[in-house]
Amino acid sequence: MWVEGEISNFTHHRSGHMYFSLKDESSTLRCVFFKQNNFRLQFEPESGMKVLAFGELSVYEPSGQYQLKVVRLKPFGVGELQLAFEQLKQRLEAEGLFDPERKRQLPAFPVTVGVVTSDTGAAVRDIISVISRRCPPARIVLCPVRVQGEGAAREIVGALEAFGRWGGADVLIVGRGGGSMEDLWAFNEELVARAIYNSPVPVVSAVGHETDYTIADLVADVRAPTPSAAAELVVPEAAELAAGIRALTGRMTRVVRDELERAWQQVDSCERGLSPRRLAARLDDQRRSLSSLVRMMAACANTNLAANASSWNSLRRELSALNPAAVLERGFAVARGGDGTVIHNAQQVTRGQALKLLLARGELDCRVEKVYPAASSPAESSNIPPRFNHIPHARQQQSGRGSKP
Amino acid sequence: MSASKKEQDFARIMVRLEEIVTSLEDEQLPLEGSIELFNEGVELAIAARAKLEAGENKVRRLIEKLEGGFELEEFTGDRD
Image 1: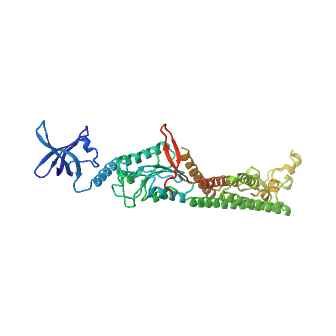
Image 2: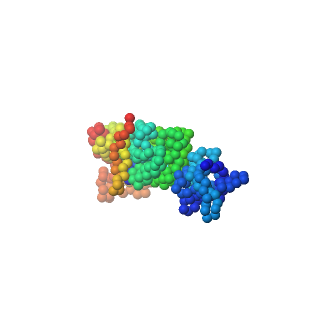
Image 3: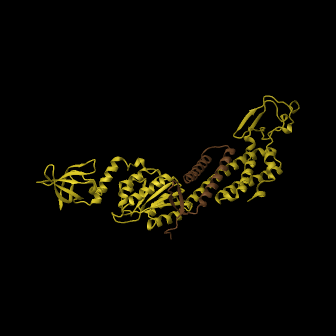
């Protein structure tokens, strides 16, 4: 017999049995719902809830009272699944499982994407094809599960836990294609929600279509409207990344080329004092090879020369050897007189004369306090360090063209 | 484990590369320093490109062995 009424005095005993009364305006009927019958219940009965109970009438002998031995219980007026969904949602929400603060960010560059779904059907195909197209280097690792029917929730949990123990995936996609509320039900089960919550790897849910919302969606770190959308969310577009790297290399190249240009202008202004045309030509040559070196190195980065590492290394060595600032950086300075003449010999100046000192960074205006002529110094005047020209010179022979890749 | 480490590698490369470009552009570094950074940057860009081009996009199946541990098996089912 079916009995309709409102639940009152509901208790869920430790033994697993449920005891309650069903009431209407004028009457009360005691009910017992044994564990072996109530374990399938999707929702949690509570006092005040309108239900339909199916069972048989019996007598509780110790007190002689009639009671209904319930074998089936349904909410009255709302769908059983709908009610179960609302109840679980409220409970997990109160527990904090959906808190936005605890949602993790997805990795920007996942190498391995773990997928928990059926190995047949549209979802897995969509995920594989989107990831293959967008990001060829990404690896897909699938843990196939049944996504509907008896035991589906357990399998989904098992797969999530396996990924957790494995530790090799950077992000997980959990989901399936569209279906009825019953078909999607596994993704509304508490154990699935908890497994997603407890996953050490960030989880993207992708259940059904855009309009389907499941408990799994609420607890996942990110909810994707469909499996294809999940695949787009988790991997970056490789072509975009490559373009980004090219742009960064271009910016570096521009900065370094400009700085070299400035350094050469400094060298030029000193050179005017030394002047011989031969030197100027040589320096021009070096300036050109420097610029082309910088360009070649940048090109190297953009056309993946991993296989060609030795030519990259020789480019790098040349660049640092040709650097015009290297000498000044080591602590040497160039001294010039008021007319810009480079001073090689103490006898070129007199006491009280103004000098300019060019340093690696900046210049100094100085005045000569005392002059020690070369004769009284152990060093030969021609060996005094600030000879600016010989450093690049020594390298000139091997620069640039000899070692183009 | 190794997969997670690789992921970090690429992420770390990109972060460092961006750092380098920003300091080159925004800081007044001595030329020596700039060239050193440029060197490092080009090296990172090469490494990043190599990683981007390395993939073959195989689909694998995760199998937990009875005796413990995991293995990956090539997944061929249902792919067209």
